[in-house]
Image (cartoon, helix red, strand yellow):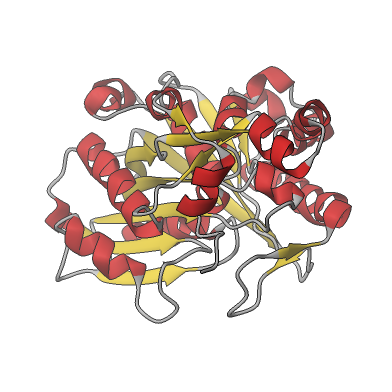
Length: 345
């Protein structure tokens, strides 16, 4: 029995702000910022958009590609670090809006930027155990950034959803996780903006976990780097995933999702899922995809997906990730600050 991705879908908000506009407000050098981060603009959620609305849109696209009745979905897991409610699940609203309730398992997940991939692992396990026929895993965020902080150039919004079942367009060949207690990024309850360890977020955190998880997966499955046609790593900026590619011996040309982070920024729990969505939009039957997420705190989930012939018949049933990236209009810093609630009345 092959378990894997039956349908997938992305959603990215319509508005964008350029790195030059943020740099102008804070008197910083935009060219230096863009060269350092390799992020040129980012998505901005409108005032009425949040993790729930993003999840609903991504979920609709995933169900459309799966070509199933929503009532067949037996579990919904929404991974995010920006759930709208501290006490009140996002998942119930999402499932109700998608027509999945009432006979369904629902839970909200948190593990920084890898909560969405954790949702994929749980859904795959439940389907494999025959507890459910289909599961819906979503990674979505409207990430926060303190005004003037370097995160303001990257922290953005978006997400992707995946229907997991036994008639996959991409078979999940295996998954492997690697986690330690590495405090590189955190936000306590009640605090509006997260704090981070600067350069510490790189080598002790991101690179150690990404590389270890990817190597662990390949060893577990008996695969080598030459066996993969596409690579997707968590994208906190444009530079880190490229460095991870080099560390693992992959050619940078395999890192297709670079356009995602360069043009919409770091969507946190939606980052690697959106990268996977972008790859599935162009992947051919028989190709193999390596995806490795990263969540601060810290951990990484690595997956190997084998694309099947079913990708061809389902791909065009919803908007592609590139469609959302190109569908945009720019805002200035004042409107951005209003939309993101940075103005305290």
